[in-house]
Image (tube, rainbow, N blue to C red; front, side, top):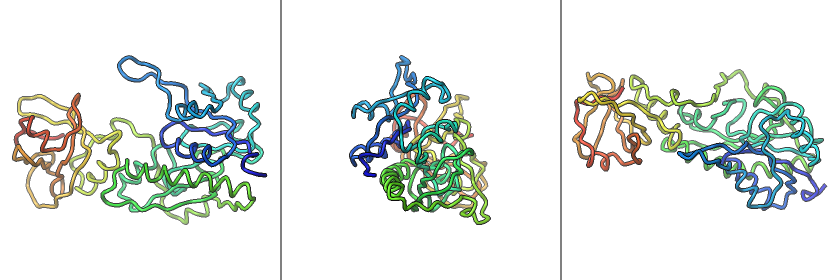
Length: 322
């Protein structure tokens, strides 16, 4: 079978999923339909917002479905009507068996980690938060338990100590687009040898990648500097690590922190105490030294470099992060 004859249904929602769909469309693969999340209200006016995948699908004139429930019979009838040979899932949602078992060639998923590590919703964030020096992307066939199916292909990617999650995300997104088309080609050629994840774990402790909520992102200043440094870059630029800044006046400000540096030192200050010249630097005392904050954002304001913020915001050593 030629790639133009293979009927593909693609499922995805965020920006990460657009690159793989674009590669399929521009590569001449026969994408017969796209499934994405329903439109969501956003902003002050609660105007319905299209997902990035929907925006791309509409720009290419691709048939589109946005089911509320994946077991709804009307949706399943529409999906069957597309007569897919293969389904591809990239950053979508957990599928019921009636959906992933439908195509004759199966359904495969692109996951942004080196499975079996970091199964879950936020694999890129957690790899950086945990200070890993390597991550990757994996394609695997779906089965009952989430992110546990047999692996088709993997690509390893280094993480530099200066990389934040935005940089790693974009790198994996581009490589993911290439891996999706390579996986389709391998399936078409019949040269796929899958590996059960149980055989790949080799006794190592498996780290999860659960969904990240606001409280997950709060900085714990009593941690070592390296841990805080990795935590901040693992959440930057989105959703962003945050903390409360307690001012001498009694006012409490919520502050997002985007970029930091590690400053080893011996001191007797209380963790969360700050040192600043009020002009160029802002250092926060932690367990084994200081964290130098390089860029941050006060609630309701825009992101600024620390020297830009200090020029318009009076801050003294009497303030404290908690």
